[in-house]
Amino acid sequence: MKRDARVDALMAIAKKLEREGVTDSAEQLYRKAVNTSELLYGPASPRTGLALLELMTFCESHDNSQEADNLWKRLRIVFLECEE
Image (cartoon, rainbow, N blue to C red):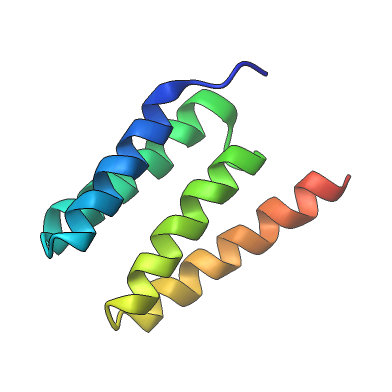
């Protein structure tokens, strides 16, 4: 599967914005990276898992544990699908 640079670019910009304290925009870009990855690679692909992990880490570090828990549940499905 060919790698698409859009997801990587979205996550890189999101990380930069997060470091700069622009958290609302960063979160939107992390979510867009997840959505884009799901469209390009499918909901259970390793690349989507990476985007989910980045969003989950963001949510954890910004005291959104409920969302982080929901994302962890989605990540577990990706891990299980990748093992098959």
